[in-house]
Every structure is written in structure tokens, then in C-alpha cells.
Length: 223
Image (tube, rainbow, N blue to C red; front, top):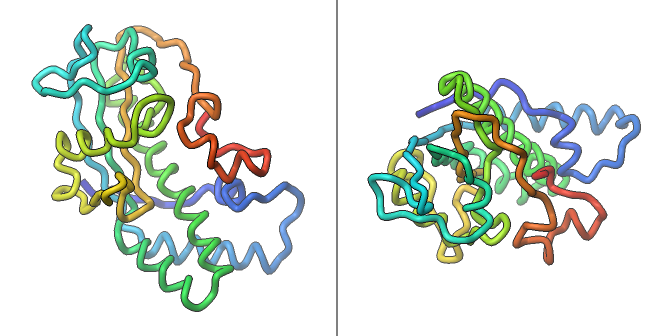
């Protein structure tokens, strides 16, 4: 399903760029505005999702899938259903960033940061609409392969269950990374009762040892 993306949160783009605050120089403001406009024009946002009943044994009803890892079991504790989600900005944004890398690395870095902010904004917007659609049920935050002890290899099961490659044009590399890169897969728990916020962030992330944000004393925003 195609979705519309109207804006890219500037503060999130600046976060990915590692901006430490303060007034932006006018030339940076202009460059960011131009990059955001280019990315919004190129992006073809697509989302595929499906709702499953969640069994007490941790499996998804009607499938052979049981998510691996103790963290995801704890995250979904108290949920009666679970949403599987895959979203992408499309291969067009990947091509835009790659073209910029051949002629202007500064612009390419801005486009990359804006793309990261844009895919998060797309998922946030979808989750807000999903919350309305499933009301009065309560939703958890998103939880993606690679967080905690939920392995990145679980991408393959999500791709299979949602038919991601055919439906929204995203593929997986041999190492489990998505192409185009500005893509996301995630689980969202659904419960009839409010769900306490689960422990997330750097302390449960598998990438904490190599994370560029942590090396600079920052975080990616997944808290």
C-alpha cells in the first residue's frame, strides 16, 4: 500500500547529523531545505502490514512463526495480538542518495540523514493511524529485529509472512540488511489493556558495541 509523506521532522534530521544545538547557519538551513524537498519528491513510501493473534506460547496464530529471543517475549507479554510491519521510502530515495555521493558528499550526508528521519516519520504516522483503527485496544512501541536478543536474521521470517519483496519492493542482502536501506521491519503488540513501557534503548541493542551514535555520546532515538 502506498502512503503519503508530507514533511520530514527537521529536529530528527539534525539528530542523525549529530548537530549539537544552537542556531543553524543560513547556508545549512538552505541546504537542508533543498535536501528535504528533493527527498520528499523522490520518495515513494509503501507499507505492508498484517495483524495476527498472539498465542501464550509466543507463536503467531495461523503461522509456523515463533519470534526468537527472550526480550521479544517480554515485550509482547500481555498482548493478545501482534502487528507485523514493513515500510520503505522506495528505491528512488536510494538512487537519489547514491547520485549525490558521486558529486557532493555533503549533500549526500544530508540526504541520508533526512532519509533516516523520513522513514521513522512514516512509521510514526502509520502507527498513529493504526492506533485509531484498532481503538480501544492499546499498542506497544515498535520493536525491530536487531534490538535486544531479537536477531537480525528474523527479518527473513517477516519478509516471508508479509511477502515484503513482492508487495513493496524491498529485498534482503545475505547479511539480512534491507535494500533499499531506508526501510524498516517491526512488531507492534496489541492489547485490550494499557501496556507498561518496556525496557529499550542502548542497553538492550545488539548494535551497541559498534554504534556510531554511542561513540559520540548520543543515541539513535530508539528509547
